[in-house]
Image (cartoon, rainbow, N blue to C red; front, side, top):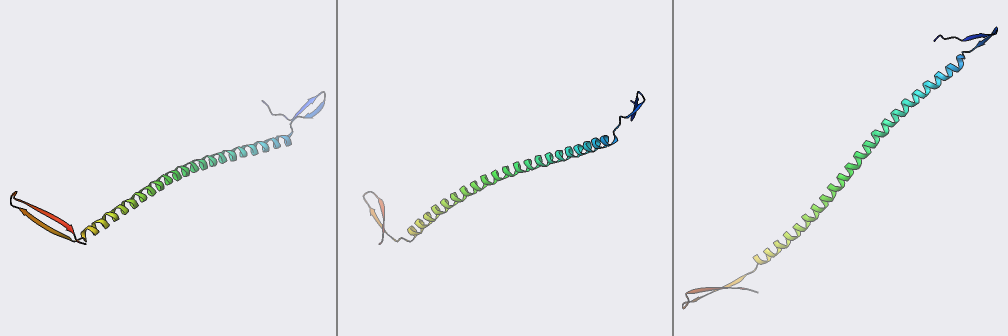
Length: 120
């Protein structure tokens, strides 16, 4: 289609092309295109931020689970250490006891009987 700017009707010339309006429209279109690009970039940034936040949330959950497991393991270790200390104390007490050993031989049954009496 031909581009024209003036028309003549009944001998009267009319300017049908408004260059200023066209320039304003082109500027508005350029601004809208730039705004669309900015909005697309902002959406991409927001999506990346959400992905990062989701990963951080998952990592925090994993860290909490690991911390809880470590706490349980520490508690179990403490209980085991306490039980071991108690056993060691009992063994030490027993090792430090002195016993009087008696032996008796019964010739009629040919048996020897041993007795252990803790000394006070």
